[in-house]
Image 1 (tube, helix red, strand yellow):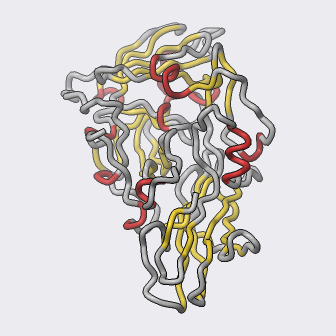
Image 2 (cartoon, helix red, strand yellow; image 1 turned 90 degrees about the vertical axis):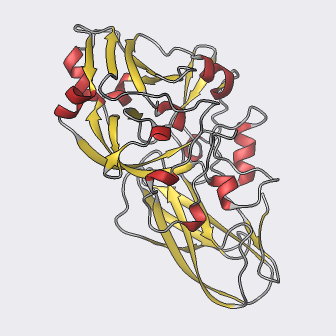
Length: 348
């Protein structure tokens, strides 16, 4: 899609993605042309006092700033892809500023039985998603700021949801409606692209993205632990044998990264990498490890363990868990082959 864009992970430093380089997954939409003075957020449904907020009113409410990543459900490597950007570029990490959704829900008063929240954007296709009330009251933001400025149009100006740790589809852009409901509702895009009709095969629940069975399908929400080596990575080339620093990024939708291990020999042995401080909750964490390359062909890979003890699965474990259903979160271990001439190749 000509409207889509990926984050150039291999070219970035640190852990914050510049707003202009945040990935875009557009579903064919151009950003709606919204006058922030005219924009309204309606909070209604199973509430005591339905309310309509202007952006100015939202910005007068208590606010917080938190650093979180957002990752598309489709951020998974494919055999035909070659570069880090192609394979893993649908993720970005920003400092988001906005109103906790719990503040708005407390303002309207949630009625008994209002156990879910349905959100909707203002774009032509009206993308929306359902989330449990427990999550909505926990750490979700109605964000109007990104990295110290107003959110850019492609990222949801003037208002978007930030749902830490949940798949990108829950972070509804151009937010205009929040409806409190009694159950999850299957929106068009959720039914078309984001659900699995068969019951989830939870053979290894501590190693995969968490799901919630609902109605006709399974809702996949929280994203499991993941890491990827950003240098050296696909299509890069090492100039010759000698000393290098392997660099990468790790993250988990369940909390903080606790440990990253790196293998320089195709998974036979693993060594602990150094995590760049501070390690933040549900945010990108940079890791490094020294490596002396002897000039022989080898395979580099990394695996992440989060503070819940969940471990990033191998590609084989990932495929076995999801079967042929179509995986919603590609967090299998990424192998990079370093050839004798220093060229780095995707070997998924």
